[in-house]
Image (cartoon, rainbow, N blue to C red):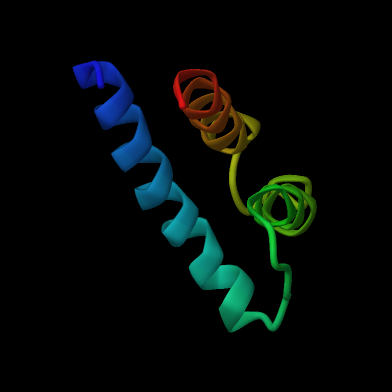
Length: 69
């Protein structure tokens, strides 16, 4: 596995768990990674709690990770 793939994987899971925390705290439930991304964007990015750039970062890391698996 290339070093950038390992880095992207670790970054993705760090961000995944970081955005899962407020979802859990606010009782939003999903069983998929895409669901976490969707709920995060809906409840925290679109409402202005996080910026669009911050929301896009999770999507970019997820796409990079998917392309390297």
